[in-house]
Amino acid sequence: MAYHYDNRRLNFLRSFDLVDLVNALADHPTARAAFDAQDIDEDRWPSYSKALAALAASDFLEERT
Image 1: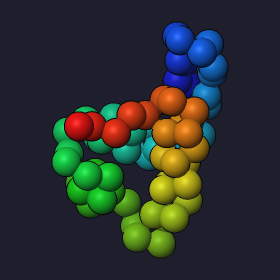
Image 2: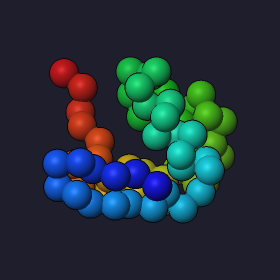
Image 3: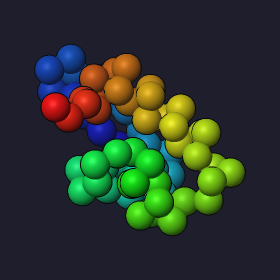
Image 4: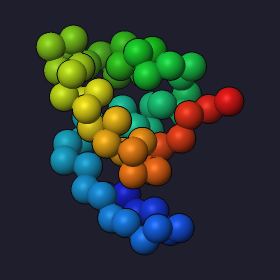
């Protein structure tokens, strides 16, 4: 579960793998590197990419500068 304090939105992360991937994003320069580090099967990348895009669209994730 993720809560955004500014817009008061609640988002449920539906798998432990997705939670691990979101947590790993901070430790890697790109999402692809996080995917590789989490050893997620490439066949599952599209669904996780869609989930990350939805989180970014909801301001739960921000691009690093």
